[in-house]
Structures are given as C-alpha cells and as structure tokens.
Image (cartoon, rainbow, N blue to C red; front, side, top):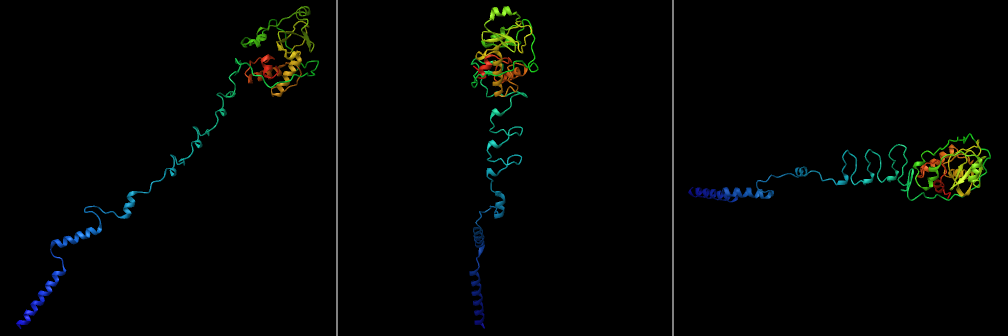
Length: 296
C-alpha cells in the first residue's frame, strides 16, 4: 500500500514537470511573443498602416502631358502653330500681306506700291517716268467735226485756264500764261504767218512748242478747246489729239472714236489717266502727260 502511494505521487510530479517545460513562463515570455508578432508585420511601432487601394487613392491619377490639355473655353490649342489663330474680331489675318489691306476711307485708292515721285496732283522732283514707247501714226479724221460729241466753245476775252496757277514747273508755263486774245487776220499774219495751220476750218498758231486757237482770224471758226495743245512730233493739232486718243484707248481710258477732237469725252479720259499716274489733272494735252504715255 505504501509502495502504491509513492508510485502515484512520482507519476504526478513527472506529469507536472512535463507540462511546465512545454509552455513559456513569466511576463518576459509573453512579451517576446508579442514582439515577434510585431516584427513579422514590418510596420514601425506607432505607425498607421495603409492598405494598397488607399495608397493609390491618395496619390491621385497620373499627371496629363501638356499637349492633351484644352485651352480656356474648351477649344483644343496645345502645341497649335500661332498662324492658325484668328485675329481680333474673328477675321483670319495671319500671314496676310499688308498690301492687301484697304486704304483708309471708302472708295479711296490704295497707293502702297506707288513710287514716291507720283504724289497725286503733285509731280515729284524726279519727274514723270516715261511709259512704253508709242509710235506716232497718221489718222484719217473727218473733215467736218461732230459737234454733238464736241460742242463748240465760246470766246471769252482774257480768259485764263482755271486752276493752272497751281500747276508748278516749266512744263506748265504755257497753261499758266495763257489768256484768250481776239485779233483779225492781218494781226495774226503779221505775227505768226508762217506758223498757222487750219484744222476743221479753224486756224491755230504755233508758239513755244504749243498750238493755240487763233481767235478772230475767222470770226465764226469752230473750236472744241480753248487752250494750249502740246505740238507732239511736229503734228497738227487734230493729229496730236488723235494719237493721244489712240494711246489712251490702248490703256483702257478712252472708249470713244479716234476723231481728232478734244471734246468732253477725251478730256475726261485724259484727266482719269493723269489722276492715276500722279500728274496734274489739266484735262489737256500737255508735255508731261504725253511723256508718260510714251509719246516723247
């Protein structure tokens, strides 16, 4: 009996010793287990861990490159060349040459490419540039004038050419100095007997490079123009006028008949040509105009 009690006690002590060896004992062992668990997670003590989806949300979407952006107002403009933009007011002007712009004021003619010496109404110091040479011709004009196209002018004693006081230069001296004179045949013969020609039955006298009407030689003579006519190429007045009409026809200024009469239609064509070429608008056949027409 005593032996059995000793055996049971020994067995109990053995079991108790085995249980203590399998389990860690004391606060230090628990603390080591907790520390090992923290080390496995890899996060520093006290730091807040963030899951992968949350990290992507905080970082935001990847930045867009500049060329994909839209300009203010929604229109795509990134990397677009400057010349494709519109000028103020919406009209396309980029790379448009300035000479295509309109002159200031409605109906005005642009003079951007006109030489400096051709200032309208004021020939420059450089003079008038000669045009393409025009060969003088002889025209068969009618012997009787068409008074419907070129009505006769009336004599006015001492009449001066209006506006001629503003025409400067020696080429306009004949116009500035002109004044209508009335004399009989004897007077004209005594002064210009070798320099008188008859055109449409009317006498003209030659003086200092110009033809003039000889008022009074025939009291009822017909004249379509009261003033000087430049004596181009030693031709009589009607042939000078006819050549000027032909030259103006070639350039699109005169659309009437080549009749040798300096009537209203011819004078208007001369004035238009003079205005477009920077000459004084004499509406008459003067030397600078003929030189510009190539009739020098």
